[in-house]
Image 1 (cartoon, rainbow, N blue to C red):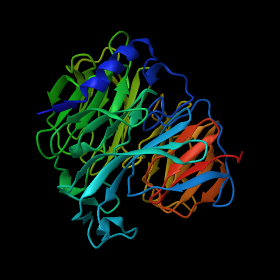
Image 2: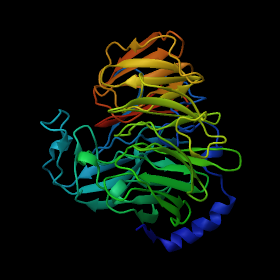
Image 3: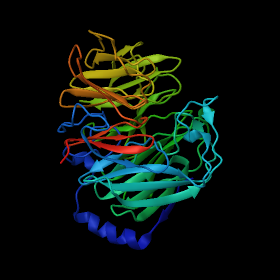
Image 4: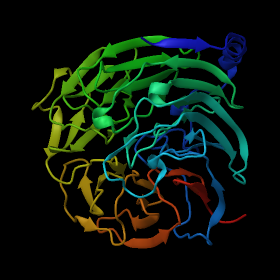
Length: 444
C-alpha cells in the first residue's frame, strides 16, 4: 500500500505559489540536466559545450568529497547541483564500501544508513544543504558494484523529488525542507542485487516503476501533494530500467521495459495501451525515444534491440508492423543506449566495444569499434556538440566524434571510480565518483 506523509502547512503555501510559477522541465529549454539521462531522457545535451580534455590538474573547476556512496546521477538546475547518497552510521564500514570486488556478487549490509539529499553550489562546489530523509538498517545489501542510493533524483527547478526505493519517495523544497513523503513498501530484488530504477517527472506527474520479486507495480504520483493518481500491478520480476514518457498526440504514454513485456501505459489513467514481447530477464537498460519511435533492448540470456512505432499501437503488437525492426546482436545490458543524431550507440560494457546502429533501419554499417583503454562501463554514455563521452569504472573517459567512423578525440583519467552517468549543463560536465563530485570545465 502507498502511504503518504505531508507537511501540510508548508505544502498549502507552496500549492498557492505554484499556480504562478514555471511548468515542469518537459517544457524547459535544454540548459539544465533535470533527470537521469538529461532533459530528453536519451543522454543528449543540445546546447552544452564542456571540455574535451581534463585530468586531476587540468580543466577541473572544482572537486568535492561526497559522504557515503551513491551511483545516482547528479541533477543540475541553474546554479545548483543536487544528488543523493547513503551514509553509513558508525566507524566500521561494511564490505560494500570496498572498491575491490568481493568474493561473491552480493555484499551484506550490517550498518544503519542515513539516506540523504544534498545540494551544492555550481559555482564552487560548496555544500548549500544536506537533508537526511531517513535513517534505517537496509533489509538487503546489493551487488558489489551497486549502491544504496542508485536512484537518480529529478527536479522541475522548484522542487526536488528524491527516490530511495524501499526507503520512500521524498519531495523537498529548493532549500531542502521536506514537503511530503510517499512510502511504496519494501522491495525484494532478484538475487539481492539491490535497487536502482529512477523516477520520471512529466508535467505534474511522477511515475515510479517497482519491479521486484514480490508484487510488482507501477504508480503515478501527483507532484504537488504526493497523492496517488493510479497504481497498476505488473506481472514482472526485478528490473532496474527507468521509465520514459513519450508524447503521442493528446495522450502521453509511459513506456517501461520488463522481462516479459515492454509496455506503453496511458499517463493519465495507467491503462495498458500496448505491449510487446521479445526482451530478456535482468532488464537494466532504459528505453530511449524520438519522433514517436521507442527503442528498447536487453542482453542477459537473450539479446534483443527493437524499434517500436507507438502511433497506432494497441494490444499485443509482438511480431506486428508496429515493430519496425529488431536485431539480436550489439544490444545493451547495463549502460542504456545513447540516441544521438539518428544513431543508437550501444556498449558491450565488459569488453569496451561500441556499436553504432542506424535508428531508422537497425543496420550497423560500420563497426563495431573497440575503445582502447576503456574497461568495465556501468555509466550510460552522453553526447553533446558532435561528441560522445564514455566513462568507465576505473576513472577513464574516452571522448569520440559522433561520426560514421568515430575518431578518438581525447582520453582522460581521474583518480576515482565511476558508475554514475554524467550530467552536462552549459560548459560544464559533472562526474560523480565513488568519493568525489567533479565539475569539469574551463577555470573561471
